[in-house]
Length: 358
Image (cartoon, rainbow, N blue to C red; front, side, top):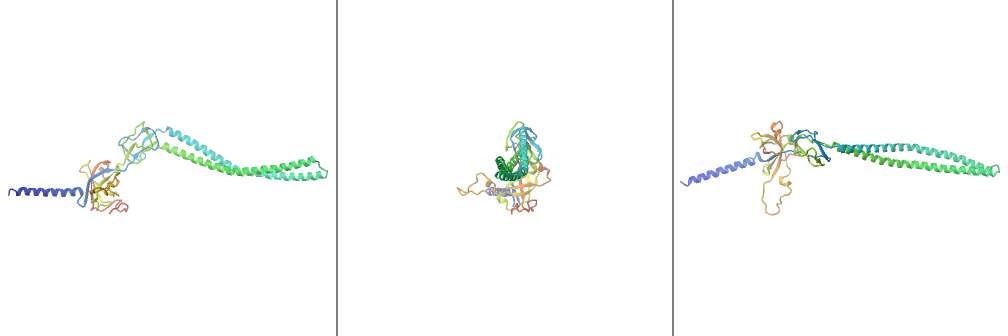
């Protein structure tokens, strides 16, 4: 009898431990309907604000942790050099525009130049006809003894002069016609220079506008590292704007927990910062791969000894609307998440074939 009680106590203790282990497993992994994980955190999609041009910061409007709206000025780069560059670009564009206008006028005037040259040829042809008639007349007079040799030679010289005038003025017509092609080529080149000058002016305008650094979206200023007097370069982050109103939860569930999980199912979020105040949420979507699949160095199970490890897949959970406490949630906070797999999928992604996972 003295040995039965210790055995009884040991049996009861083993039973209690087994019950605790069973309950703990259900609490940690879910009971088949409710899938739970504490491997979760709050995040948001936010950009790092960076300037597009280089220069010295002459004013900083945004303050640490300040709420800003899309388009509001956050900081400003000294713009004297960019204003001067814009003035130069405008001058170059105006000069190029003047060249185009001048060549267009010359090309339009070329028709009258050609017409004038052709009229001169017609006049030369009339003069040649008269000179030839005089030459024939004086040759006849000279052969009959009625005219002098000097008159004959003079008429023949006038005839040759008229022929030379026709050749000269016809060459002028040909040159005027060829000049049309030359002017057209010069005009096309001038127009190209104008387009380039207009592009330079537009780029100068953009560079000047880039001196004002705006907020890319509504959100809260964070990681502000810019101060007045700093020299910044394009692409170098100076601060971040975090859209806390669009924060969501990334919960890493074990692969064995996702059998019945679907986009649109109800979820509950417990934020460590606000104990006892659960937040309502919905399953937005499931990641296309496990976390290890995106690791820089992935495990190679084909070599060495293999040890099977349950993988985790990120699940995106979005907060339901009309929850004042959700506005106080900050990116990076630790949370616990539970998905009710018995709930009917609802919400924007519930029936969207791009997100449904069954």
